[in-house]
Amino acid sequence: MRGRRRTMELNRSVASARVAFLRVAAIVSSTTGVPVAEILERQRCGRPNRRRDSPVSFARLAATYLTVTACNIRQASLARMLGRHRRRILFDVRFIEDARERFDIDQLFERMEAML
Image (cartoon, rainbow, N blue to C red; front, side):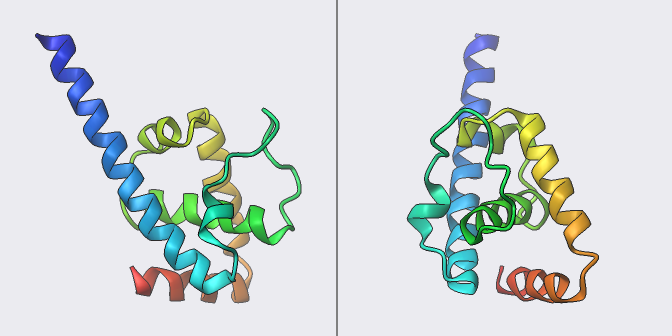
């Protein structure tokens, strides 16, 4: 019975991560102009997109960061929902935290956080 309860808890956490990510993706889409479908689209190759300057990549990173920080979703649950390794989520969140040192990016994230 314990295994079943754990599975149900994992499914619940992944479902809540999905709902939060979709809500955040809609806000990021309206702010950056990148369609939600492109934010949700899985990257084609197994390796993450190394081009951090593309608008689609930035929108994905922003959605990941806001889901973890503003919606309080665990990184492991989000990683499971996105089909990525949880370390990749950690690196994405750290990248945005470093990028927020720039004033314009910090203002952009403050606006998106206010929409949540």
